[in-house]
Image (tube, rainbow, N blue to C red; front, side, top):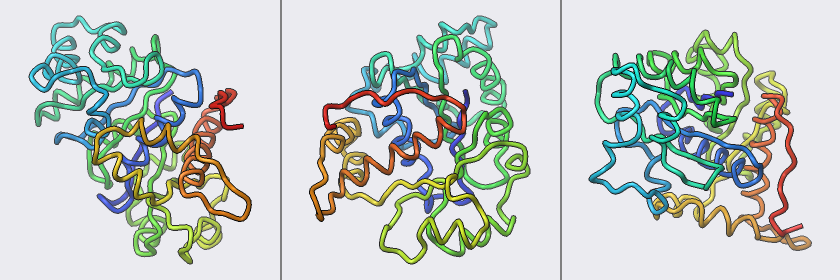
Length: 276
């Protein structure tokens, strides 16, 4: 199943950061094989977040990833094994990463993506794709047209919400696909709660999740070792009448993961992490 992460504006809605949190947490929680990639032509936060775990050296990056898959497509030799073998393992047998485009050639990427859509299912249950924001990016539209679910990333900024729900920044493909809303860098003390957003913009609260603003999560991305933080956050315990930021973060991300899987009609048991 293909899940596209998209947002109407660049930067404010934390699309890549939200996908990293959701995909990694689903991989930690469930025995599912997940593949991640993106369509950005610059080096993405997606690759950087896992740099300390990636086995591929900088000098050999061109030998794997989207560039290598592109060469196989050009030769008519791409198979499901080719997709798997040109990905990098982040969590063994759970989470793999295809490094994004290594050149600025949209035509090449346009040719490669349909081949990935056709072949990944042999080895992966889920493909998460981070696509460029806005309504005028051809690659984003292509991915969303093939998606089984679109995760729409938003913020608590009223101007962003008004423009989006007022259909000013609304791609027509959203009318044809199931969607889940994810509020990035969510501030729980803001007046613009998910309950208020649901009420004011007429959407089902069950469709809205959020990734809380969390300094330690931001630091983990900067330190390029996101797994270490997420594992530590999972064992944080709530205490009676005491707020725990890491426990709150984990609970919120797990809820987003559950919303995604439910929207795809994928129901699996959360594996015990020793904190029950």
